[in-house]
Image (cartoon, rainbow, N blue to C red; front, side, top):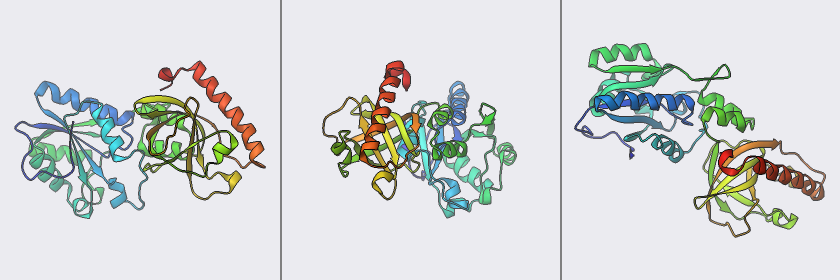
Length: 312
């Protein structure tokens, strides 16, 4: 997949494109249906399937609050790439871009620079200055500029529309199991192993302390799968403030059930499988060790019942 990070100065391709537009944060089940619609629409008409997405999130610029993202930009583009999309344009979203009217955005960028013959969006799509244009506006512009417009209805799960905001709320509460159902895969955090305070090693449960660029860290103790150098490992991961030791800020600590080597500096991928419990304050290290024994038994039992490949 070709990934671009700016609007091209001249038309990109010698043939027309079909363009899916959206923030695509999480690339969840609803986004996946948009991408499948893009491919189904483009292929028989010999059009290039192209995804137009934004960074930062559009609501972080035009909304009242900054949006904490489900994925890093690299995770988002990798998830889009899995659909074998030809090109993804990550458009820098700023005040200048947000000031374009809906017609200017479609005429100058989507139709003019991206050579779109068709546009695919979710049925709640809004665009243009102050998000004043919607799918109805897009259809009118499509008729004016010769663009086919395909709107994709929201995907539902257990009676609820799948959305990035719903998934964020689930992750904030630590509900990684339901979040995984809506994402179509486990929630994942990437990071680098850094040196910690070695408390886990002192207690007999060495842990890897992880620094991550991910913005949403689900709180609690989780059964996880950790990928290191393209191999998956069973693990137990705690995210929180380590209240037994009165630490400040959020910390990520993972104990690998089958790893004894030095991990410092390693890049890892943590996938959250199941929450075991909330993080709590213990009376002291001994009580914490007793609970950790219970947690590790629960993790090992899970992986016995659900071997790694069937767990992910």
